Length: 86
Image (tube, rainbow, N blue to C red; front, top):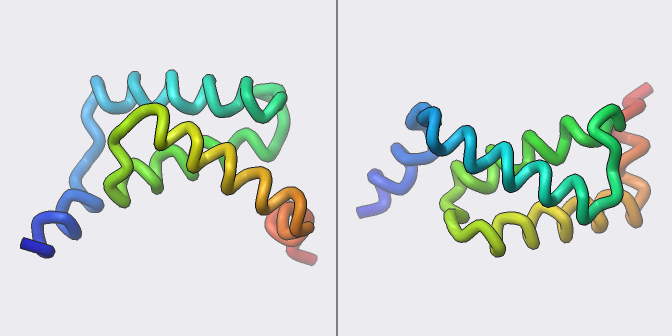
C-alpha cells in the first residue's frame, strides 16, 4: 500500500528516532571531517532527517547515503550555490 509509505514520510519523528538520527548525524559529520560549527553541518542534519523520512531505516545505509550525497554536492560545486544563492 503506497499510501502508508507516503504517510510515514509525514509522521512526526519520535524521541527515540531523534536520538538515533542524532547519532547518525554525528557519525556522518565525523566521516565527512566536518566541524559541528561548519555551516554545511546543518545540511547533513537535514539530509539525515529527509532520507529517514524517505524510508532509509538501516543506520549504515543512511550514513552512507548522507556522506555520498554530501561528497557529490561538494565536488559538483553545488555547495556554493546552496550556501550562497546570490
